[in-house]
Image (cartoon, rainbow, N blue to C red; front, side, top):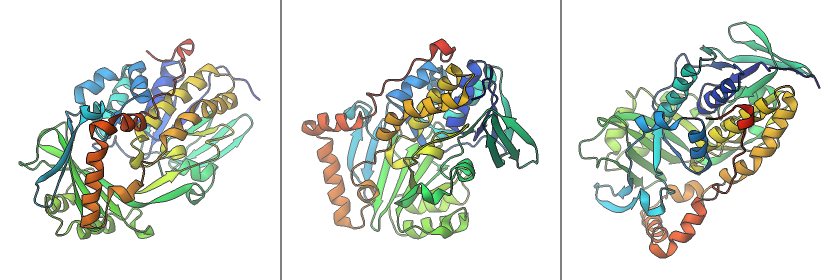
Length: 409
């Protein structure tokens, strides 16, 4: 094993996990290089939450002042029928902020911007937009990387934080099909003008006959909101990266669905941040191969159904940076420790809610009514202790203390 004093680290992916690990490394005196395929930071995105270990990470990293400036004023979740009549509502504090709506909700784009601002405040890193990895070759002493621009460089550690369809994983660990499990459907998110009759501060959901759900969430800007659409159906390879086909599927599913379905479908084509992807789970026997490690969705995606994607990215980044800083002269040891320390948290965080997408998207009117009856029962006073125990499953995880590595604030 070669010994180095200050590792050269490459991070592939400028999302929450990639920026968080780069920030923590920078604070430990390790100035990483970050490559991001997009030309600019990606705006908008779904609302994500911070709770338990991920909130503790955010506090240790000094993210909370920035988060407080742009967090959403979301007070709970409500369900409506095709005519817009409320059938059920659940305030966020009913389950102590541990239910579908947490105490701290923020859009993915805003949370990422908080990290980018902190990176700049700390002196910045070598950030390259419009760049990505095309080849990776490693030996016992380092990793040779070729980029789309044609440049070639050598690093001591490569971190793949490039999402569900990770190219880093493909190049180093094998095809996505080896590790991915399709969970039965697709989700879409995008921004649209807020309907005047949409109740402020409440996440409103409507279930359509035919295994489809549509919802509108509050936005930081009161004139806009975020659409969330869930579609249960067999996997369709034609939907991958084909926006026309994706949007046609949504139009077909929302047609005649009542409530705000028509408005959502009409606004979709003009959305500046349209997102669509399959619901899949990534399970791998290891996230580390030599000097290459996977972070977040690239290595252990649980899908949005778990509600733990941001938590796994932030906690994973914190642990990974801490281990690299602690074992700066021994990258292989650092990456091995990263997996050992984080694996128990990820195992719990990846667990799907009972029934998964089938429960969230009933096919029939009877199924919709039954689902809402069960939701009311789960929120009832006698069942709250049971629900709170289920929802707090990751809170027993104890974050390591990396203060001796000068990481954290």
